[in-house]
Amino acid sequence: MSKSLDNIALQYCLNFYSGLSCGEIDEKMDILLAKLYEIFTAQILDIGGTRFSFATIASLLGLLILAFFISKIISEIIRRSLLTRLRINRGLQEAITVFIKYVLITLSSVIVLQTAGINLSSLAVIAGVVGIGIGFGLQNLASNFISGLVLLFEQTLKVGDYIEIGELKGTIEKISIRSTILRTDDDLFVIVPNQRFIEHNTVNWSYEGHTCRIHIPISVAHDTDLLVLTEALLKAARHEPRALSTPPPEVLFHKFERDSLEFELLVWIDEPDANEPIRSSLNFRIAYELRERGIKVPLPTRELVLRNPELIRQAFSLLDSDNADKEERVTINSRAISTISPVSSDMSTTNLRDLLRNISYFERSTEVELFALIARGYRKYFDIGEMICHEGDPSEEFYIILSGVVEIFSEKNNQMIATLREGEFFGEISLLTGTPRTATVRAIAVNTVLFVVERQQLQKLLSEHKELGEQIALKLSERQQVLISLGLLNEEELQKSQYAALAWVRDRLNSLFGISLGKN
Image (cartoon, rainbow, N blue to C red; front, side):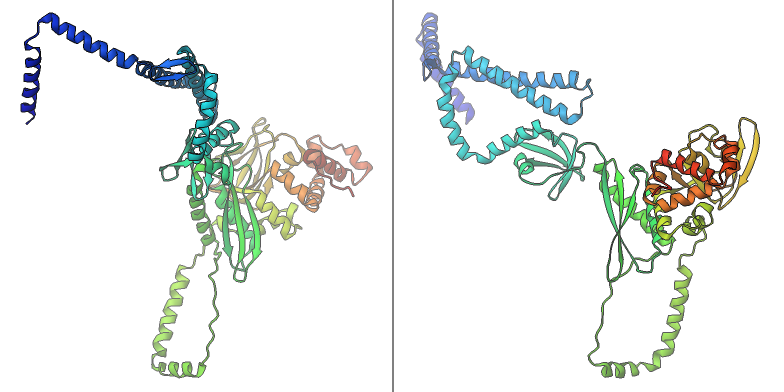
């Protein structure tokens, strides 16, 4: 069918030109082109005294499209060659790039229109009337446009930020004039209108830094040892590699419930987009630590009211013949339960409170003070031969030996000083007096476990518990020979007053840790 139509058209053209000479054909073509030129150059629109034809309109549109693409290319070149080298954060780079792009588009459009002879002031009234009509018809689009400008200039939300809005959580990949592209934790891209960020509360996990705190609720039975629970939760937090050690994790006691005690573990992280995986890892660690220590998570209890106890009694009397079998099954079950009960003698499950009681500094400490000390410190494991601290190092922590053996020796004199075992401690004098380490310490037993208290945490502890500070000052003042050998105390001063050592220790602690011991 198509071939026949082509043949007919060809035959028509041959018939049309068959009687014409070459000159006449050229003349016809010139007439046709002239007609087409007249059509495209005919004035069809008059704006501010400037007349427009199809040709001028087409050329204007072409120039505007070209200006748009050139502006986009220039803004991208500026971002890649200049902004990236200046090490500006990703969000600010995107905002500056978008701003430059739209400024270039606006300027180039004005230049093109003025070059075409259009008086822009004459378009003001028309633009105003058209703008009112568009405003009524496209209110949402206009609102999203203005919201996009606000987001770009305020910089409260930037590209790369991890945010939460409603049920959506994800990382901002792009902020455009109308919408924002959000990449969720499931690697899905969601297009969110900009107006939604202005009208609804948005949580920006990355605002002013990239650290955030996650909350993990824990319910335990009423008879749980609170110190053991605190140690278990803090150990789980400190063994999570993605959890920050500064600020340190905390344990909060929220309230008493009918069947449980409600606690909450607070952990700081610097990977907001890994919030859920870190939370899951912490839950695994917490479950393991609670099981190791025999801490029970209570189940909700219900009361059962029997309205007809006599009928129930009669029903049970029919089952007397099966009592022997029941007793045997109960015995077997109890044996099975006792077999799988977690009883561990590992050092990690040892009650840290009892170990701290054996140390002279804390032998008279209250339960609250021990609780605060456990919350401020952490356990650290060393292999045989591993160095704990070196002679001459600044003193930033002191250590309590929970298990294993350590050797104290002088590298300068190549002399062994002492061997310390479980329940003993070291490093407290250098920390409390602000002097460098006087000896080197290394572990000489397999799986040596130390309880570490850092200077910053000790300062917080002493500022909150002045009584504990007084106990430490009193015990430290009793080690007068050590203080004299370090050149910190003078024997003549000690002979003048028996309280000279205590007064010096108090003043030293007050100056080093900013606390006020011995003052009313």
